[in-house]
Length: 435
Image (tube, rainbow, N blue to C red; front, side):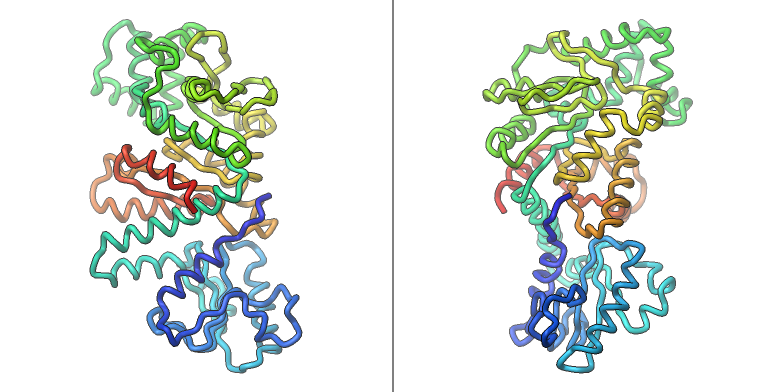
């Protein structure tokens, strides 16, 4: 289990930036509690003069919670009673600052909130955006807040990169939809137009995994024929080892430069482009799939299967609905075990993923629940997401939609780092190594 705790520092730094020179901010204020410095009930931050900009009252004690769990409010009540008994100054105010949304907390915990004020941290950050004249600058500052947390997590290690189709697309391989169109065309021996695919997709519940099951049936459930078709789609007209993607190069560069920090890659892609680039820069890697075990080389876990360029490594692939059902059914399936191990023990960086994979979201939900039970309060997962890809096809207020998506991922324990176009991603990854 990771041990770093950045939420308190992040909130402290933000509050300090909002205070005037005469508004003192104390971090972990042991000195104001007489001889009880060892108590776990001492709050994280103390503002003797408050903060006018954030409407924080004088003599405010602040407790920071990244994630709320079943005993949070019991602990807050204990803290309130402790401060009331031991606080030297008298007449204090207790505030909970959380990175979980608090819309219903004041109603659900009215007995608690009579004495304890609850604040959603991102409401403060959004207020900064509204208050500042230069909105673009404020948005950039908000991005930097998330990026700084990612930098500190990366520096602390250990880290795992989770890679999705966007990484392979950066090298010119087809995305999920284009791959399905290509193998559908191969199965039917006719060129399937986009509008035809869209109609079939809708008829299959607008679900890519149901669509995968439909396509596999067109191959008469001949898995080898299907894998051959996918292999052709991935590597047709490609030269082994010829990698041009700046994103792939940057990921592999970080693996080589920080061998003590970057422990593994988990990929949902069938291709072996990562292994090809690692070989290009003289990093020995091992493709892990099915029941294969790492052999001392840098492990690249293919949790949805692998079809390598040379056609030597071949495994069962996760494509259709029943493949996903098998992953759900077999909780101790090696791929689930490896993902859970990384999510529970490492800092995780999601790159090129839409974050909609149902099994991944299930594992994230499970991991967060486990973390809450163990009083682990900080998110240690970060997703790099392109705004237009996430909000594609959305009509109306896209910014509001993106805000809700961000909230849902935060609820899964994942911090979002937005970017506007794919050319920005290698530079963002480069900044991970600059805390």
